[in-house]
Image: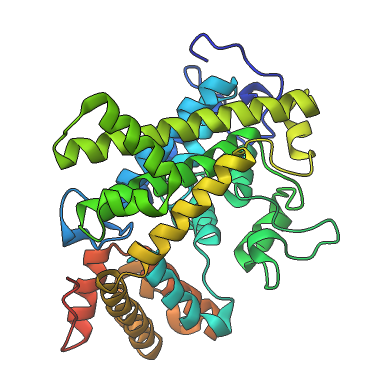
Length: 400
């Protein structure tokens, strides 16, 4: 724990609930360290290098990809875990795994694939992450997937909160719609306590994702000249406060340094707020082990209410000025078309799937065939999706 005392409510790798397929312990690594290492060495993790965060992969080398975003989330998660005395390796493993299930072209690709799969259970990137680490990675001799610990799988599925309420109805992100079949099917085999909150380490991974994408989408939007820093400051008091501090301390800075100094302050301020609020929550509730965190009834790792209100203003600004900017939406609309057309073409001609993807495809029912096609498309990088579209269609959009 790098000199920080271990919190009573930290996940303990020595008391893990184990793996679906039992394995001998490692003499050199904890179970959570092994999980982290397996995630890093997975094919799905490597593919994140060429998957979109907001801008498509060839917009420029300075913009975030899913991989660079994931690494930044992991760094923030380790910082928070160290400060709060919980297991850094589990927090890092969850941060590294949280985006494994994303389809090409970011949320535009996910929405297109979800719509295409509407008659077959839809598509959800969180459920897809679970499919990847439990089924689709086929590298180990003794099992499909990565055979991760219960704590890592639980955190992967529930890092944003419970999936079911106490009555067994869909909750949280799934309220008002069905919980994806992949989650329910795996839970029946290896129960993940879907109605409980996750560990502190999983809550840290979730809030680290929030911190990273808000700060770094601001940075990328500024680099892309979708808006300028003074416009952000005019709409977001939190940015104005930090920009005032930068200007007061450093005077006239060149734009790139002025942006970086502001963004780094945003990350630092967010981390400090989470640490302070979480310590207050822990002092109030007094969890004496990891299960007490799961049974608290609400997240213990959180922003304070004033800072969350400021972050909400930043999100509103980014939504209006970046995510809905015509340059971004125009490209994403075309990207969604690529995903839709790939899915339609492969449903019509599943024999066009390459290699093992096409093996036995004719023997599957419609839903299982559609799911295999969705698995194939979801695993594509942006550039591979465009290459496959060119192979099947005469006209492929130039996503610029």
